[in-house]
Length: 315
Image 1 (tube, rainbow, N blue to C red):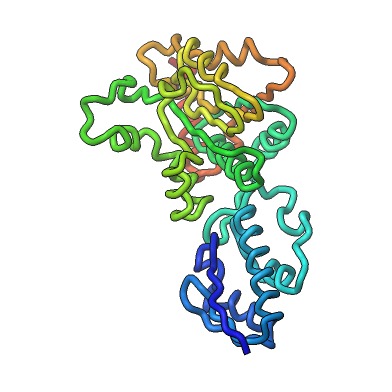
Image 2 (cartoon, rainbow, N blue to C red; image 1 turned 90 degrees about the vertical axis):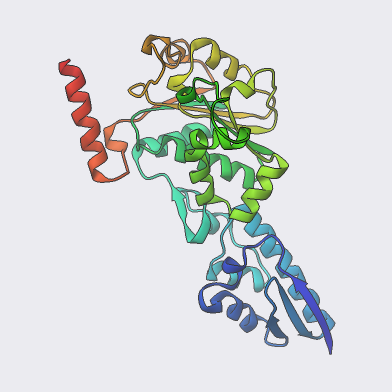
């Protein structure tokens, strides 16, 4: 009888073991000739060399699957540890964008979100504009995480103008990251839903995921990257031109914004509306215009948006 410690690499332990060890117990059932003992981030396997080697191979396949799709289910365990791989269609249903943390399934939930996903497939530059709560940024980040997991790009770059601080953050306490984090927190929130915390921290440290203010995009050429400009209504025309011309080879760009939430000192300085007018109809550029019917936050949000629009129209 042989004995070997097999490391659980690249998989969140809670996802691997499952609730009440349900996933681990399923693995044990599928390898009845082995005695398997859970050892935290490793498994102790006792049995024949042949069976241990087979288990190692299946663990490797499970790690690859998890790295790509970010979730494990009983059906996935069954298929992978029985010697096969899940069919693509059974892994990722048509309306699912990406599998997030703790069983979260991120999918297009409204007509315009579905349109956004569809246009993403045929356009390298996509504009998503509309009211707060319509899922523009969340859908964009889900597409980015999916592209990274599928190895379609090598990095994700998220940026937004720090207009609230006038792009001059020196008066705020702390280092650069601490100064910027309050303005970039919505982007972190979405990423935390879709990438395991330890892996996200590693991605941030290695530069696989980058979050930075718009001013830091100047002079860069962004190759093999999925780049999202959020809150684009707060960019001037020269700023948004600068951003769009950063596009390099094998890059995907998504620009999101809400023309009703311009925070610039003079609303007429916003370059998003003029950019949409100039680029509408250009081949390779998709535009999705969200409306109140796409708002998927608390039911009151759509009523609040409607009330504000009514008051503004009267004024």
